[in-house]
Length: 419
Image 1 (cartoon, rainbow, N blue to C red):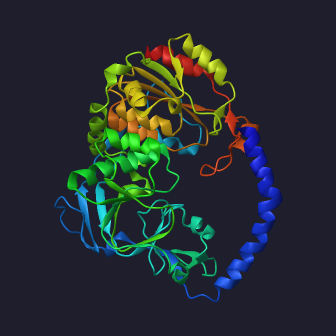
Image 2 (cartoon, rainbow, N blue to C red):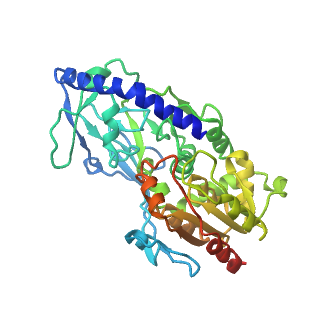
Image 3 (cartoon, rainbow, N blue to C red):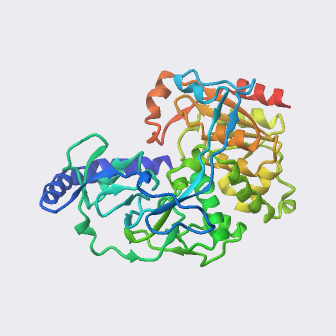
């Protein structure tokens, strides 16, 4: 796997980069002669609020399906918090999961690669996936140029809708239940699946990029069968009435709402958990090879935990039913930080979770999730050597070769004290 990545990077550097350096300035020059509008982030405040009545809101309106909640975060006595300034995410405090909204903002182009929604006038809908956070991703879109000047609230980008005249058009209202064409397991489970559950209950037409097999497995256990969601090709579409939720921008994963428990209880009730009684109750959730953030001394940690009756498990090698059953029967979960940890939504209340995180990876969604679920969460931040710190890369674009060393004694000490 590493050899393939190294070969791909070498090929990109030798062939693709020189071509890109020639092609990109040419494209930017030609777009100066095509009419366009500055790309700016829109505001949901432009839509009047209408009462939620068990259906999607009409064109140009939005509804509040349910309101915000409050969840208390408590730093476990066995936790080893980060030494960084971002450690405030894990100390005792209260978080407020926002309520669920549905919005019908009118015609928008929907881009498959990133899940961004862009109006014909150049407005990014803020609750499209990555919309308010990563508008720079539009720099790779052929109908967007960098010819607009930077301004307050602006992006320095310009949208040229004339280049999308041939985009397929969908006129009817559909609830959007996809974020991007390359979905992340954790985001899909926490952001999208509860939204599909809602769409099923209110009988709303739903729209998605082609579903992966693992997504179909999840939705089948939710009672959403083939054909219930309209799947469209991964290309830019013009949607006349997209119904968007604030969950699509990642809120459900970042700060999970207690209301989501209902969705995961429904899934768990449809999985024959008793058929998987041979699965361990104490296990170590290992990240797959080639996913980055690898442990240099993982073998030593596996051996030390095995001596304590904690079995190493690689979740992607299990079926979805097996993953649900594994977590539903769990007494103790030791986990490396990653999307597979979202499966704790199936854990029984009071289950113990020991999470291994490298310094610099301050993303407290898992802490919020465990608190909302009533789990006993112990965070174990791992210090980095200077070499490891330099090789880590950006949080949003980590190096695929980044690896760090786990403090086996500290992790096993926490496991011993948890019992």
